[in-house]
Length: 421
Image 1 (spheres, rainbow, N blue to C red):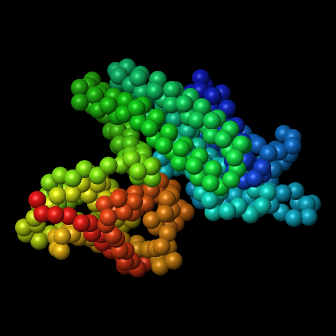
Image 2 (image 1 turned 45 degrees about the horizontal axis):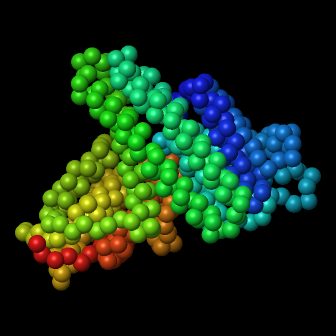
């Protein structure tokens, strides 16, 4: 990733990464942890930035030397690596996980954990969440590089975005400090789950304000300063706007999931034209299909009656399913259809994409689950879209069904109760 660090933020980032290392050590029962970054001015195999759980600094350096190959592979491939960081003369070895830190689909570092014993799936999920959040922290240098490439005029308009980035980094550091203190006081798995939910909710809410400022600033420059900035600056601004919008959508998904779990997401019934919703959904995913020989077809009877249901949630469910199909298809056809029968709205999405093997199908509705570990580096997303679809359908008293074969494609159907308008 093309990233240049801001010296003013470097020490603050170091403190945040030390907190990350300490939190990772606590999560794995007091084991050891190492945190690496991989910026442009650092070695390709990464630079060791923080460590926790070691008796001495020499022990940490020795472990880092033994793990150099695994860390380099994790950063270069974007895939989780496993091995041993124990002394070769020791009687037994401790299994070590090397998890790439990913920002905007590229590796920017690695988190290494060596637990004291076999960890549970809940603890592994908490470690993965910590790695995901740390990747977001490390993405700020990349965003700064994008904005520095803009013309002098556009930089004046985006000063507020830089200030918000500094505030956000400080806030993230404070949140990590609060969360690690909670972990030290309560290591039970139930507390870990609560901590994860609280952390996600806080991060989602506090990221919205500065992110909206960045998006609004980019839109302002593109709409009012087009004649005063170069073509390369316009391209950089559009790229920043696209990335910001995608990140904003991910944050909204996280916040909606949290609100559903807290029973704080209300149902708002209104008159809905499902045909119009499908047209809007197809338009929204066109960018995902750029440069792909993929055709979207509709299967909607004429006329499809207007119904009364929650417009926002139906729109969100259809978008998430269609966007997921668009991401995992390289060529072929996607069909989206709908019909009304027996006081229920029935919708379905067929695609001729890569398909899902039977062993993975029962897990795809789980939070952060992705069929292929490499998917997080290749495809944009945090693995939350289908989880949100499932929870929204439960909220609307709906049901769903999935049929898929590897290499053939996938069909997702759902239905919800609805009355005619």
